[in-house]
Length: 291
Image 1 (cartoon, rainbow, N blue to C red):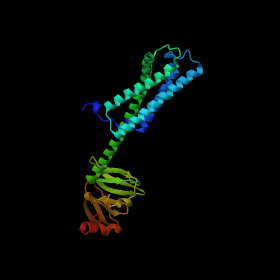
Image 2: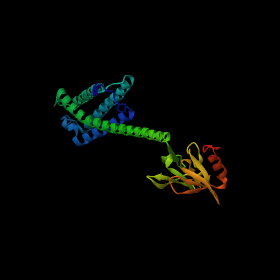
Image 3: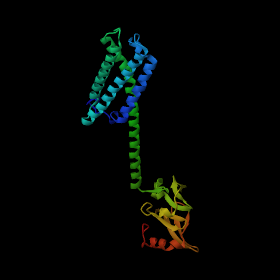
Image 4: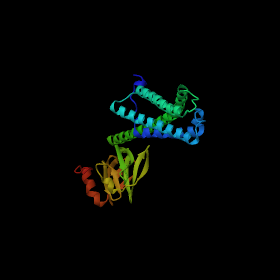
């Protein structure tokens, strides 16, 4: 299968793309008329009075634009009924140019009062002019639509990558921490998390980073981190502390009460009286951290 046998991309037949093409064509055609004055290069206006000259240009614009608009939307209709390929589009555009050139030539021939150019000569000149006027809008429109389509594809691909990344994070041994707005703010391996310390409406997540203790400030309260579905493996042991059960080395009792020793760092986390029974039951095996 060659490229000519490929289906036409959707963006080439969308309404926005058609209107963009028509708008670009009008702008460029006006620039050609203002700068190059097509009445002059056709050698048909010298014998026309001024108002006829303007009428001639207006009729050309209306006829050409009407045919072009009808052709574009008819092409869109046909493509919806039976998906076309690039070869069909090339043939359609060629026929479109021939039809517009012939119509404009008829207009020019009517105004060519002195018959300075015969119909064939007018057709040749008009065809060149029509091609030069439409070629740039065709190219510019296709480039803009391709860039827009590519941007949409990149955005869609990024969304897929983000979703896959989130899914990968959720499916592996990671702890994912979310801010107050519910957005993922921090993620690391569950075994890296040491403990979490309350700081008003924030929480300081202490974790291991390349063999050293590091801290991430999370915009979320410690109370909200007690969601067992989101934060599995965390054990609240104090009003100001939550520990990761994977990094608990031992629990001991001193004169002030129970104390948790962490395995990866030399750090002791106090257990308050409020959570004393819960921690004891957990280590005794009578309560799960997910309870």
